[in-house]
Image (cartoon, rainbow, N blue to C red):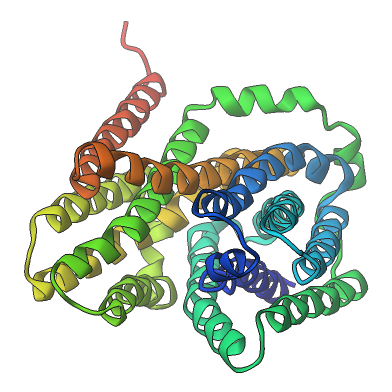
Length: 385
């Protein structure tokens, strides 16, 4: 069953990545202005964040399987509205509905994963989930670009919708509920408050926001950096793929044992340090060879943070509040994406140094993370009399 959950995670993220190369051109084709096109791209993450945050309670109350099937069914329906859009605003509302529907899917899948993960291999389990996302990130954009060029944009939406319908049917027949009915009866909306006060949960939320903020900044600023060096967009693609490949190697190789052997807080701090160093270095370097090396370092930082922060959420949650925990966590994940991309544009217009300033912000988030970690660690120490 664990392998099937991994497959669902790949499909869920494939839905996002396969649309990356086509949404902006599709919006323009429908007559959307530049401003509306930006809104169409951003609204998915914004509505997804809302869906993440509000679906957590239902995942705990009604079970992982029901909410997983609900998410897959509604995502499939939402995708069918894309080809029916007759204007930019039609596409905007399709994206909004799609993001809300998908908001229940990812937290439910990760709550399932948390329930099934062996207690001594939680870090490794989350490393494999990172590999699933990495696989979707590598396959999705290339597949979407090729299919839209050889067939049509509409074909992509129909293909992914059918993929979700088929996966949903298989999940309905084969997947078993991982949470207990007596535990679900005790679930209360107030269970969210202890999570928000938990210092480890706060560390995980900061990590999620910081990691995805850096991704948003990189997606905006790296193509501009490469263009300033008079290099082609193909080079940007190779650079972005390189960090993903490094992360996959760490996720899938024996190196993934470190996620169970060492404290997730320590691994995250190292990862945040590497990403801070990478962003600041990228802002200064003019050599493509050095930029390529820094992107590999960024990949190591990314691979350190992702499994560790997911393991944190898993460690502090139980069956009755795990849906809420992952719902909050992936809401911060989506918030980081929105903030990173919008912040980059604003900083670029005002100061022209999005990579350098975001690197400094990353340092600040790492210091905040360290203070939370230190205070929590000290509070656990026995007091001497």
